[in-house]
Image (cartoon, rainbow over all chains, first blue to last red; front, side, top):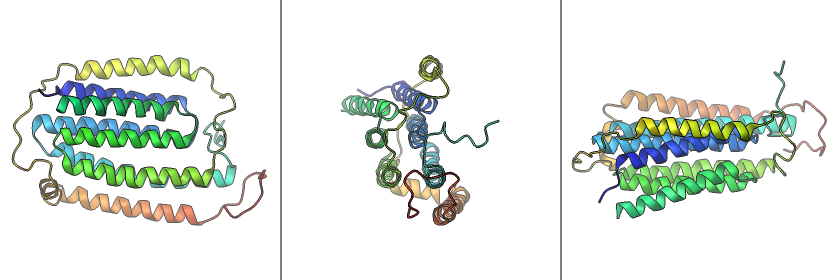
Length: 101
Length: 176
């Protein structure tokens, strides 16, 4: 008895949606980053599932590179965040409105 | 066995995903993210991706979540999002839009041919992934190392230079 691949893909879609909703509704920049991680992980799950379905390793390699990009993104993003906190004393994205017209 | 593992992993990851989005404290969000990453590692094991499962635990849970926790401790954000939002009606708009997105994505993946092919010997092990990585994917691998170097340089540059505060600080003290 195996789980159909659609079940994994539906779970991936649900996780991606949760991440999207998180980006839309939250205002703490840290939680926005975590929601982006959630979306990246949802896509990774889809890659791994389809890699298994097609018995082709390319999908798993794609996940490897997504992992690298996610790590770099978090490092750069969080250091920018610390920078913003030092100069403006907040991580609320509504408060960071220097470019507001 | 696979059904059981999938049920556990799916339930945990959905609960953790809800926790990331809905938790009031950033620390709780980070710990929920840890739950999601761990349960996805379980799912990777059921999908014959042993190397990625280990990598997920080491890189995501071991490095990225710890980095999040460090920054949360560094910023000590107190009572986040207590003030009303400047942009109203975010929840009222985001939930229907999210449901529409989920419906669209589900319709796209529903009924895909899910018959799995037989796996070659050693599929998804460190050896097979490594052989692909240093053969077919050698150039992307080198570019990825360059990207990591850029990340290191950016972290050092952004982290080391203290900026002059743009406004008056309520707490004072420059030893941030």
